[in-house]
Length: 228
Image (cartoon, rainbow, N blue to C red; front, side, top):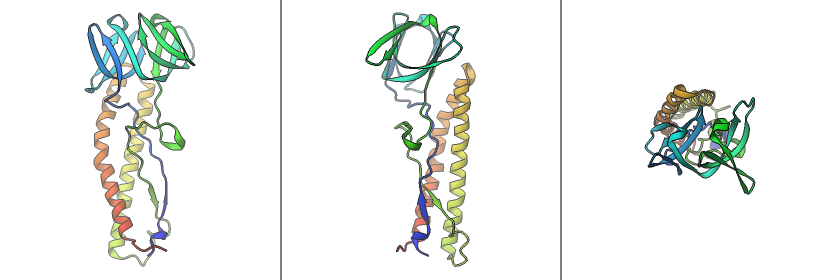
């Protein structure tokens, strides 16, 4: 069996964008400074995930300053507004949020804003800006014309079966994570925090599943060593 019978093609996977825990955003609460990721603002509360993984929810009266590095796009809903608009958030100071409008700063009082929901790149497809902290997707292998071949050796058959099982498990895991990300983006308050914690745990759980798929992929390719 020639290796050319196995046709590789890219299948881009959903990558969890809950943000890197080592973010460079900075928030000053009372007299304490924290680094991490600014998650958003709702009902007068700042939501900030520290570099240690703790999610802070602080009222605006307790927040002295916020700085995003780099500034990022968010869906911003003004008080009594019916729809949100995309704006680039730079930070917060003197009771005002600071936005970038081209090369200029524009500020709005926090009391005039109902919600700020940070936008998250969700997929690695077509240059959609996937987070650099996420691992690259493992290319899928098209087994058409291979798995049903009656001339496969026992080792080749075992490699094919092992790969199929590992691929299915990995794809199912990514689909479950994608559904959780979608639910999180629709959620608020405590439920949103719960989903963030679940997604952080799943990032660690993904690694052994991913490693198993990588090992199965390497074994499959080794089982078909010849080429044209």
